[in-house]
Length: 215
Image 1: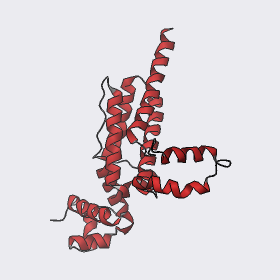
Image 2: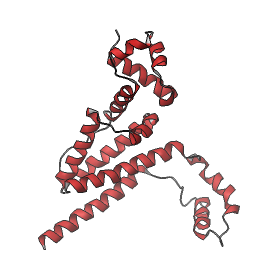
Image 3: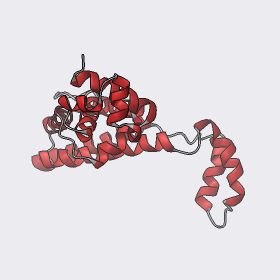
Image 4: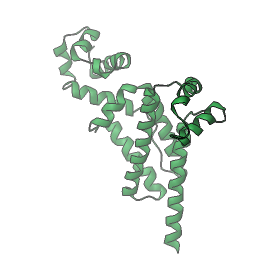
């Protein structure tokens, strides 16, 4: 029987296989073996369908809890979001370019703000911190998905590019290339270490603010 859920599941299969740009109401109807007009008994239009798809993606992200170990909770949130977006790469650009007000997105934002507020940040500070986190998560994930060089090719690519990086013109890049070729650094970026760096900075901010308030 046709329902909003069955439509959503069929749409998910299309975007997972072909990307969001290939999603159309006609293609969706064909997949469900129904007439396109019958879809509108359950969804308003294609924009409504995209909103439902995005909210479904966000619903898969682990929400942070309010407790003393806010760093662990925000790390779990970040790792979960990163993994979910890697599994749903089509969702990144519409999440960044649309106003998303589905219940899952609202819970995602609200629980994240609450976690940081419970840790001791003001709500305006928590809002800014979420921007830091999400800019890092989205940016890191996009780079990981689209970076033109595979990690296993870093060494060979560096060797090929070294003649174009003379030391007199590009001293830092030349030296870094030599370090890569000596295999004392592999060039791979680690998602968790970046989040942990942000968390350490935020922890120091809280410590310093508490010291000032107690002075």
